[in-house]
Length: 159
Image 1 (tube, one colour):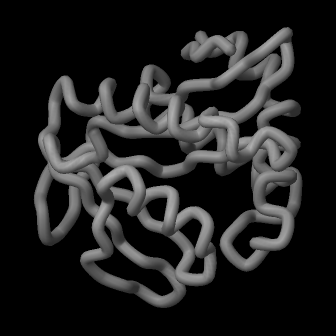
Image 2: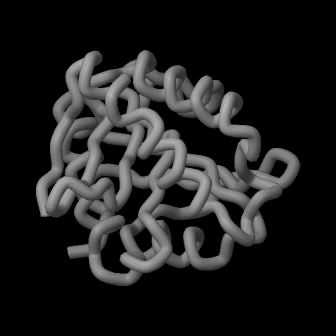
């Protein structure tokens, strides 16, 4: 498996695959996801433009296994500037193999160059994702609607 960033032309070439990876990863969790391909495409464009270097893709044999979108330039009204994980998805048949953990660790390493605090939002009913993030040291600190705010401080992740 290879973790890589995508230059703009490659992102555009891979976007259709990325839309499909996103759609498949949210099967059964549709209340937390965009469902129309055009909306997903727009969302992926926003994620990529927010911080292209923080958009990391896991590939194996030319197949996209998953991706993480992280952003160095984010502001939290309670915590101030921090590194934000906006999205992390892995295709269903490869979940549980460490791909998500690898993507998260790469993203946190990228964000840690500028930040000591990292945040994300996760759907309140997405038990698997909540357990995953808590297993990596994230702690729930608040709630807004159907979303749980989770924070990790540098040095408090799993060892």
